[in-house]
Length: 196
Ligand code: SF4
Image (tube, rainbow, N blue to C red; front, side):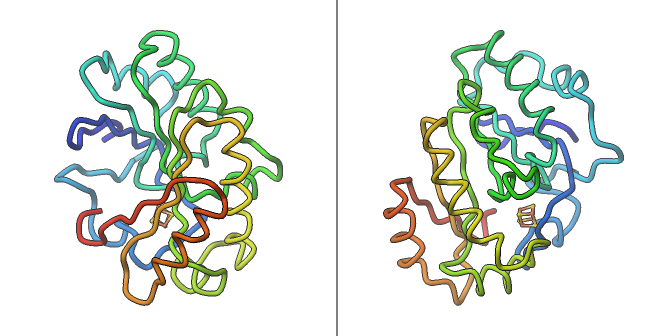
């Protein structure tokens, strides 16, 4: 399933790949979310994604979310977002990301999202690098955590709303995570483990 509806939002599932292997990842808990099967037999092309979206008028937002890390396919995200902004300029676009894109590409990619993405929700998930590493098992080890903070800082220059989020799994110091978000000058949100 490439697109699926949750609440008033239209979600885009463009890859199952990810540089993390989080203990709480929904990919470990069955084939989908909300009754949708999100395992992709193959990654959809830009054209296939645009066709699957159709006319999103009536949705509150379009969200690159997936059952994996959408920015693994940066160019596809950019191309689909360009199409949406040109054709449906009033519909906000959000990305839910693990915040590791600058590590994945070895450069700051946040400028490429300017004018295309309205909200970026970055999974912080822990208050320090050690805990992040234990919980999310990133390919990049503890460096991933610091790069996420830097990614959030850089994203602020190009994206109107930047949100750091945590899942309320036991052992995470939510207050410290909130303080990190405050220091960075970005929004903060706690996601329910049960509902994600
Ligand atoms: S970052 Fe998201 S998609 Fe990747 S493993 Fe963690 S929960 Fe799953």
